[in-house]
Structures are given as structure tokens and as C-alpha cells.
Amino acid sequence: MEKVPMTVGGYQALDEDLKRLKTIERPAVIAAIAEARAHGDLSENAEYHAAKERQGWIEGQIAEIEDRMARAQVIDVSKLSGDQVKFGATVSVVDEDTEEQARYQIVGEHEADVKSGRISISSPIARAMIGKETGDVVEVNTPGGVKAYEIAKVEWV
Image 1: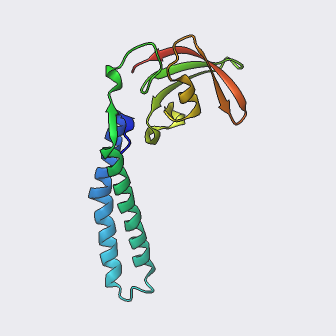
Image 2: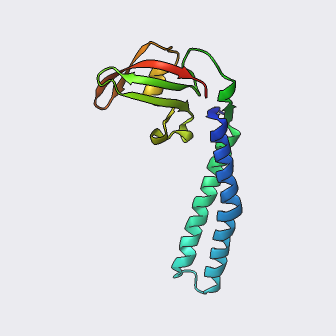
Image 3: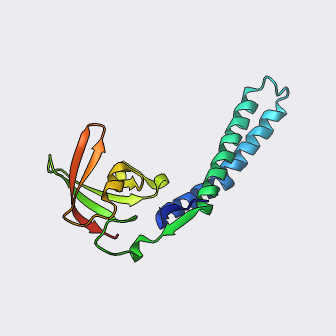
């Protein structure tokens, strides 16, 4: 069973999602199925079939989240330090061509959200930065060609 790295915040978000699915979504869909059953003939009951489909999706989500949580390797970023880029690091980079600055935190796959500056450890830019230090230049293969970024700062926040 392969461990899945994630931050404390990512684990807490999964836990909240799981609790919501089990305490709100699951009971609501069970009630919807019961109500649709009361309407009679199930073979032509669209509400019943929609509720059963929703129930299947919810149960699938619950199983997936429970699996991720069971395989989680929770890493407390606040306890990490060092000059090298590793999982959990917040890295400030400068695009060598445009001088545009960006700041990314390297997180687990399910936590990634580029708009909020969190990139997956398996993304090309994160893989290129792992093991590098402030001042190093990394080259990343992107759909638009090779991009070069200088690592301006490595933080543990």
C-alpha cells in the first residue's frame, strides 16, 4: 500500500469532507430513496433512480476518502526546515523570460489548487524544484515549450 503525502490542512479537509458525506449527504439520500419508494412503481420512478445513483456516488466518495486517509502520510510543514525544496515547502520563483514572480506550496495530489498557489508534488514544476535551493535555476517542460525559473526563496510556512 503506497503512502500518500499530505499536509495537516489537507488531512483535515479530507476529514471534514468525510464527516459531511456521512452525517449530511448519506442520510439525505437515504431519506430521498425512502420518499421515492413511497411513490410506488420503482421501474418508472425517475426520482428513485436519481437518488440511487446519487447514493452510489456518495458511497464511492466515502470509500475513496477513507482509502486516502488510511494511506496518508501526514507531514507537518511547520516542523520542517532547510534550504532545499521538499514536500511542503513554499517556493518563490521568478520566470527567467518574463521576470514574472510566483509563489507555490508543494502539496499532495488531492490538495493541489493552482489558483491558491498549491501545486501537486507530482506536477512537472514541483518535480523539477525538488532538491534544489535558493538561487538554482530549474527548467520545466511545459506545453508551450521549456520554461526556466529561478528559485528566489524557500520557506516553511
